[in-house]
Image (cartoon, rainbow, N blue to C red; front, side, top):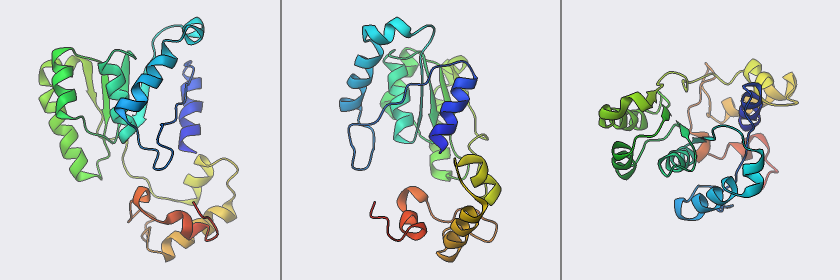
Length: 198
């Protein structure tokens, strides 16, 4: 649902979204050696070029953020939004040598990663005119009925209340409806849908 929301926002801003899936269909994590050449081939294909007008930007979260940064560093895209991900020391060196427009958006609640992104920003001191650090937008939000109704297509009040109740019972969210367990590393799908085998 968040990806659909991003697509809607991108369209509202006058851009044309292009969605890409990783080669790895097991954990869906991105691979620089395997995925970057595929994306580059698509973006440089004559059919894409025929309909592409203006700049191309990459958006990604976590390993997708690293991929987005890599696409910008290699000048496959003109800039990147890097969400909830730090840059590697190799990326920092290449950006210092040839600055690229990057928008860094870490999650303040992820203290360790936040610290690494702040170090990235400090290390890029000499090219800060090309780097934006946004350390507030990816702040924590409570998982409420209102939130689910706004974010998830076809969500109902009854389903939202049941979902929240199940997650509370399992200790995944606290009494303030804030996440207690990282959903990328948990069994939340089995909790809300016991018959779900994925």
